[in-house]
Image (cartoon, rainbow, N blue to C red):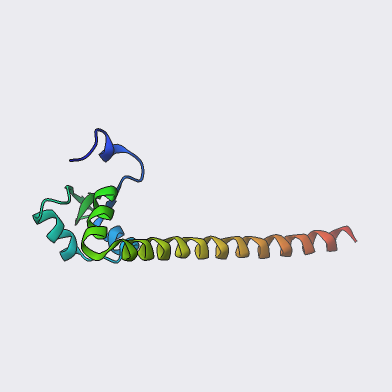
Length: 110
């Protein structure tokens, strides 16, 4: 089912925990897809906690089939929006620090 080397490609896999964060699907939904033969997986353990490693392309296809393409698009857009908001917050914090440093330097010059 999976393309050659897909398991090793950066960003091509995700854990079941990440799938819940990014797509809003729970472990039971994933297990249903595995039992139906729609999803391939690898088992892993991190710090004693088991997780499932899935192929992103297969998961997205399965979500589109089961929940609809609009649901998939909506969840992907929510994830993108969260990342953008996070980046904006980081840039604002950095800007604030730079402005404070600028004021310090201007005071030292005078």
